[in-house]
Length: 256
Image 1 (cartoon, rainbow, N blue to C red):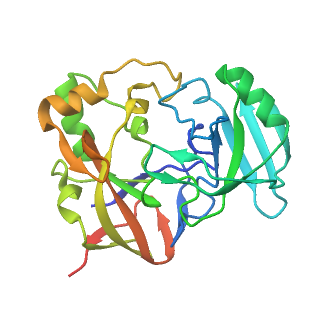
Image 2 (cartoon, helix red, strand yellow):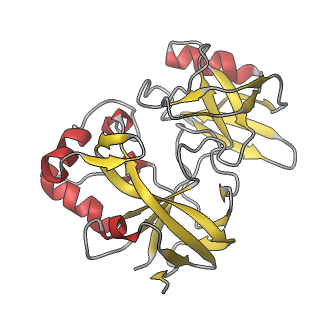
């Protein structure tokens, strides 16, 4: 088993970057999901609610705190990300995600694209813009099984998993809960399953709903338990126990 793809984004829900390597620590991949978008409730606005921002790419330079948003090859907003008032948006009725509002030109631009008022939030706890755990894992064999169910290739980017790895056994990762895993220079502890939402039904390039992902998973896996209750599970969470660099091509090895 080897790492086949890495996927990160500084702003949860926006276009993914696919770096050749990441540095993993107790907070996840360094620079990943530092920010997220919230409405006035305040509550998280995910791609399940709007796919209009899937094509927007965000880059963030932590040393200068310079944040840039690009769409269709053009910069649509940029500036220094200066945290403001504290806020704790609701994440899927599962947890409150403490952070600070980051006012800037992006609020208006992203709100216009989404057709709803959005505010950028910089996460201030260890999870930042993550839901349950800061790392996620998904095997290529699991994607192949779903593709067979769909009768067509399924793009793994729909699931926005941090670490994708090669495997011959579909859903092998499901049996690793509580196990230790060496991935590159890092040691991970695997957690429970990731329950999927309607965001996976959206095309990762256009943001349009074009695949009945949840129904397909349910058709061959049924409803399964997770921290969110019964639902459609696909992939697993993990946390970093020993920090280090993870590169595409690195071996994925169970320990013990």
